Length: 327
Image (cartoon, rainbow, N blue to C red):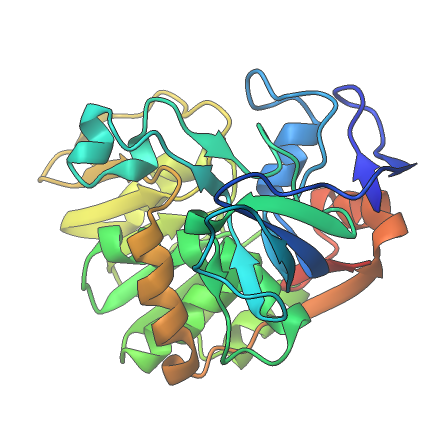
């Protein structure tokens, strides 16, 4: 197999040849068809997440074909298409797992962070944390759903059912969430980097009622907002844009420091909350909903060997939608 490997934090990924992995009991080996590039991959490569396993193969928005299964595995058959997300394994016995909050597991394993991920031609995964994609015929289009879609869906559920919703940072997750919101009959207000006309046009094309810079105020107070951009300064801006009792959800795994802000922005029962990881229930729920909602992902395809270029384009904000690596 071939893989793009992070050998040192802050260094470009290196193309390596490796022996094909062998699935252990309860695991599957998957031939990767496509792996989307997530901002979390940037956080891993740039050292913004603590204690990554290095060397590591990044990538956790994986779509591929099951090639072989480990002993005792009966969930997935060879030749079937599966998706592999960020959450790679949970302990099943800590207080959070027992309470149905496996996203907060005390001893989790994360794909592309603490176990090798999908920037490769092959990957091994815990079969219990892979999801059948029988109805998804295009692996490139499906790949962004495995994180941008899943964490976007969890963020949307936590944001609540407010009619007017603001999306701060119109990238891979927001362009999927916007389509779900419009299907639900909500009004979408998209906030981009100031002056990013391409992103604003993209948002309007996906049904946003209003699109502008993150330095602007929406024409109406919002019921809720989700922050996907890893910019702490957007928290007070979003709080200022929501109505009394409104909720602001921070949807990223990493964010720059939230600056000091006047208490009046939080007062009147506004809420500022975070989202952490996902549960398998989130995946089952969203993957059933996405086709019904008519979600179509916007993608830019890169050969696997150009993974560093894809990361650079994401870092610089040169992408609309999601970058997808194809071995």
